[in-house]
Amino acid sequence: MSANPNQTHELIYDWNLVDAPEKPKQRIMVTDETLRDGLQSPSVIQPEIQDKVYLLYLMNDLGVDAADLGLCGAGEKFKYHVTVLAKEIVNQKMPIQPQSAARSVISDIAPIVDVSEEVGVPIEAAVFVGTSPIRQYAEGWDINFLLKQTEESVSFAVKNGLPVMFVTEDTIRAQPKTLRQVYTAAIRAGAHRICASDTVGHITPHGVRALITFLRKMVDEIDPNVGIDWHGHKDRGLDVVNSLTAIEAGADRVHACGLGIGERSGNTPMELLLVNLNLLGWADRDLTKLPEYCEVISEKCGAVIPFNYPVVGADSFRTATGVHAAAIAKAISKNDNWLAEHVYCGVPSSMVGRVHEIEIGPLSGEHNVRFFLRKNKIEENPTYITKILEVAKRSNRLLSDEDVRRIVTVMSRRIRANQEVTDEELDYELSRKRERV
Image (tube, rainbow, N blue to C red; front, side, top):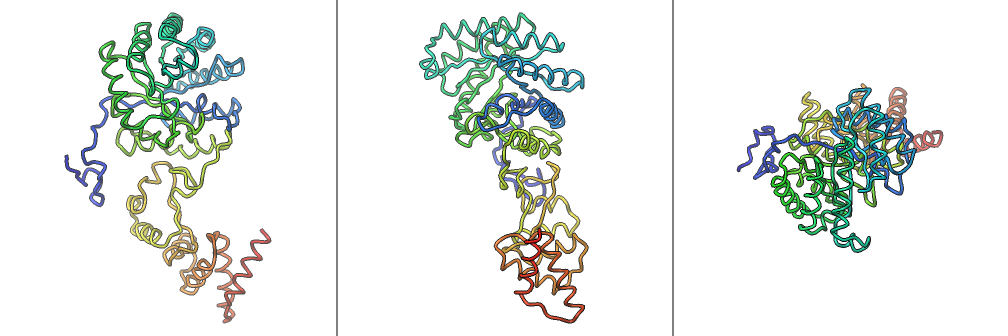
């Protein structure tokens, strides 16, 4: 096909539309794994239950379809947390499918049954087992063991009223024959979904396409009503693109964690997945709560957000470079918000409830200064502009708002007194101010 710039906006020729894949026919669902796989990161802080509840509300605001609330079988504390969260979903009538992960053993699934009965809602059991040859060798398993574990665990869960998503760990390194046998056993035992997992972050987009295409064909032969999930990790930095490729190939639900926290290098980042789904036109979720969602995870789990992190990093919608600032400032002066959001950015800031910021620093130009003065309703005096830029050029960092206001104050006082001010005096004034701070 040929790209048509009118499919987006007349000012943009979008190469993403050249031979682009068709929009998925089915609704793409998203599972939030932050409170399970995300908390398996060795470096995170385990949040208190009230913080988990707060995150659950934010997940609901973001339109998340399912949430793994934790491992019931990991102990009484975790079982209690899953119970509290599941009750909140029920009491607040949240359209979120509660989940709890479990090994393919009855002792892990039984606590999920207990919680489900107490809360009065079916909790989806994410029953998992390792399937790759390397995992089988390490554990001393064979195919007969895998089939026995699969049939017994899924049958027990289904018999007790739990919907089952059957998960094969390390799917991306498992043999096709093994996957066919194990998934067939799970589906015939009652699993309504299967999940392919890139447990070690090994696969590439090409591999994802091959795997999901294989699974889609296999599932359609057994039971076309069974859904396919994709669970990816980011050890090779291919997490988001792999998730999008899985959707293209036939997966209808994908997993992610806030800020990408999780085992080793982590999981597919929820914030980046949601933004890309919206930008591709594959979803239309309200993402204005995304920064708050990430801030809560950062604060309560101790996950630092780098300043240059996409979408929610401090610098995501912030510039101090003259040429960038000039284009954005000119767009703002036209009272054209769309233009201001797109002229130097691929993600519109308003989509995630943020705004563009223009700072003043060593690489700034006149437009940076004028933007600041205009925004703060300060006279655009040419002398102010000249002096602010001179100070900025001598600096090795950005000027703070207080720095700029101090320069204006000093210059205003000297202008009224008809006095000159030297660079040394101005730099000294700023240094004194910073020392007092």
